[in-house]
Amino acid sequence: AMALACRPKLLIADEPTTALDVTIQAQILELIRELQAEDGMSVLFITHDLGVVAEIADRVVVMCRGALIETAETARIFDAPQQPYTRALLAAVPRLGAMRSIDRPTPFDAIDPESGAATPAAPLAGPPDHAAAPALEIRGLTTRYLTGGGLFARRRPAVHAVENVSFTVAPGETLALVGESGCGKSTIGRTIMGLTRPHAGEVLVDGRPLDGLARRDAVRRVQMVFQDPFSSLNPRHSVGTAIAAPLEINGIARGAAARARVAELLALVGLDPQMAGRRPQEFSGGQRQRLCIARALALEPSVLIADEAVSALDVSIKAQVVNLMLELQARLGLAYLFISHDMGVVERVAHRVAVMYLGEIVEIGPRAAVLYDPRHAYTRRLLDAVPVADPAARFRRRDIAPAEIASPLRPAGWEPPLRRYDEVAPGHFVMA
Image 1: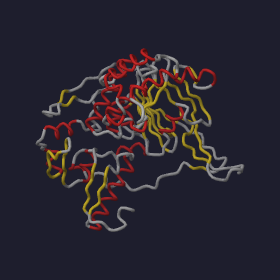
Image 2 (image 1 turned 180 degrees about the vertical axis):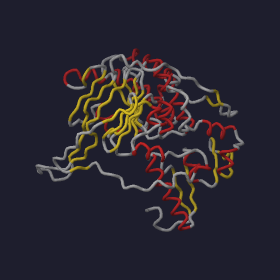
Image 3 (image 1 turned 60 degrees about the vertical axis):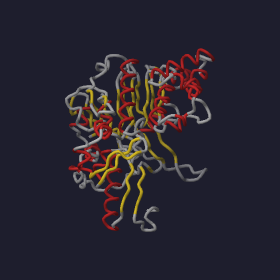
Image 4 (image 1 turned 30 degrees about the horizontal axis):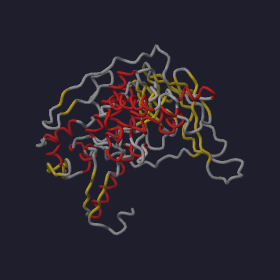
């Protein structure tokens, strides 16, 4: 609304939908189309999401290292790209449905940027061991935030951010947590890490509760990678100092021992150990996220929470970071809680998928069951909103009505009704 106040002839939209979930993204794209049709306005749409490009663009300009390398009508770019770099970009796009015939997470194909040729990837590890004790177990987790009412009010309404959520993650398994913005995904991650105090429930890592006197030891077993790697790193410290900080704080290593461990971690995430003396601003976005992963691995955790860890990266770098995470999981036996709104990436990395709506899990089950045979209406709505990297399908989503975003704010004293889950297939549960 602010950008349109002066009725511009040109609207420059710089990554306007990057941080949005798929349903809100679909509504914003439809709104831009409607405004464009009403006012005859031109739009310069800057994005790294080729699904969005296919959805909204009439013409496409492809840039590489500051130079324009290819431009054409959208359909021609997608159907017959001329430059190897363009072909490599298109090959790296995660396409929902591409994993139907594959039963476990598989890295993205390796793309040669010089030729655009793809080398098919194979699964890196076998299925997780569900017979073993869970690496992460959540029991009845509830997180609420009191609001309004003044300092001395006795009864205040509350935001029910997470409501009676339970699940487990086995060693070597990835559970993807998906849903619209504000559904409680990130709150679960922050509550597990102790950054938010729960109202009720219990969190266990390797069978040990994350509370009481054992919390300091147990919390070392679970670490988190955030969405914005630059904000996660202190720009005044070298990256070596940032990675060594957990080692020093926990009394594991100092001095030469810490520097040696930092070198090992940098090599583990595919970076040159000689880079330890550089500052965060000297790295690209993908490299900074690798640094954050290295720091998260410093304490040798068994559980890694990835909160939108690749959502801000372009398609080719996103594929590389996802492949790194899968390699680390196969090598170290890590359990991942993968929080994301990118269904194409979720399909690539997840063993199981949990769908959240207004703080509650409405559907959970094996990846193929949830993504290819969704039973809950909200899950179907999420999947229908996923952008397709095909200009011929751009009108497919016009039947998605802009729904008012429901609020998790509840009056004082409100308690949710008792929920029942039906097992519609082995391991596939849907809220009744």
